[in-house]
Length: 127
Image (cartoon, rainbow, N blue to C red):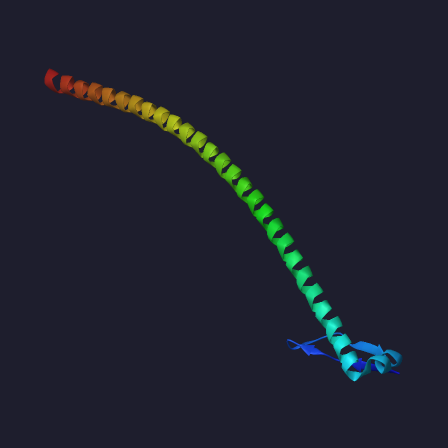
């Protein structure tokens, strides 16, 4: 028959270890308990080392991805600034052209007003 051990460590249920009867009889109760404790300790150490290794890989990968993301964002910001500068220069040219066109039409309007006013004056003083 097998004797099963449930071991609780850090409030987590550990794996059930079944120690065969011949081994249990050879080792005795203290020896069996020590063997089970040794196996559990080795499992914990193994689990900790795997977690540490995975953490290191994750941190390295995260740093790489953050670096790539930062470079991509910096490139996109540079493109955006270039596009905005081009757009602003086009807008300035368009505003300058519109201003020149407005001044031209103002000149035509005032020349027309002076012509009409002069005509009214000539008509008024002729009579």
